[in-house]
Image 1: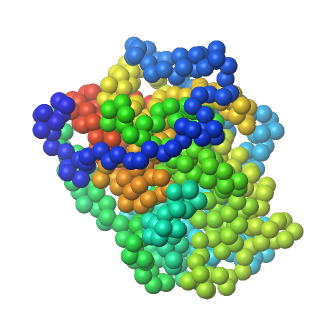
Image 2 (image 1 turned 180 degrees about the vertical axis):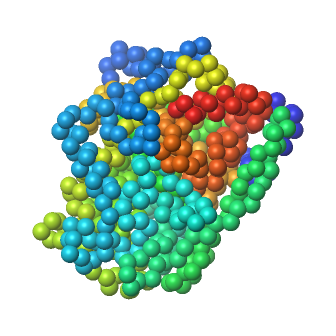
Length: 512
């Protein structure tokens, strides 16, 4: 490629050979049909036509402004841009959304407490409310300066060791295995009288990258460790995987994308030879244990918004719920003081600390945070940037659009043309972004393609521009330059552009 012929000086940690992964056997599984089951033949043709990538960059596409279909919010753009409900909800659903919002913002307290409907926090936890991490329903950030780490934490996991553990992974009964002492994630907070598990430590190394036109960009390469461990050492095989809280918009619409449309883009063995080998994540639904297509989380480890919500309740807050009935959260048998603490279960309310309808309402709220409308999709610079985005190969993973299923559970999500810019598949992103942590079928170099809708409003909503799974990128340019593995060619194409063209491509992203 031209960038390579020009001997573009990109940092070594970003360059990596394509890591091929085994084919996941799904084609013969009737739970994963190879074509839309909700559409007539006529509608299939119609959907195929409207979702086909454009070749005309002279003007905005039809309905491109409405990124979330009829659910898109056209509210004034300000710091609350991610906090509006789907525009096509019924009046009764608006009330349900507002109740869920109140629970999403609710501060939980430790047990026992006089506020019995709000106790059960922890005993070990990372935050006291969902809103604490997803501030204004937006993107979290790494601790910067005096800022705390509330919207960022470390996932802890080790790979399978025994044949029995390997079988559990192969059957999708387990994603990986927790640290025997510290559990699935490092809890840096604790209720009064109990020691927290420890804290995350981050150090950065600045690495210079020279682009084709001579501009130098400095990337910060993070190193993660833990300090002040209060319950002994971590297992030597445990990996540390940092996570910032992702934005919450459009989750119900993502859930309504038909499996066949996601699987149509999967090519685990790169049979077409384009260097892109997207792999579907297969996971068990929490309640039914049925095999489902994973589509939520940085490694697509959850199949539904409810699963994502239930996991966050118990893992981040230490709040048990019907789908994760663990009253002491992520405490382990090695933490006897943690298990000695009172739970917040109130029998008159239910048998968990957040019984239904709490989980149901928070799930509904999370499913119906509206995607904001595009800004100026017909602007000349934005259109030029869009063309370069396509030409650079970014759309190989960041699939522009889908039409959601007709039989979606919520009518507000049904048969909507949406523009998430993601294929929701797992991709090898290279050694530079590797965390070394296996999560189900995802290996230590693979990540789910992140949706791009709303990305241009990050600074407006959250007053920062930290991107990627750990917020290492301080702006969109850095985020692109960290792409490796299957995205290496697209990254090099961006790096080979002149400054005006790079600015145009960034203008397109900022319009989303």
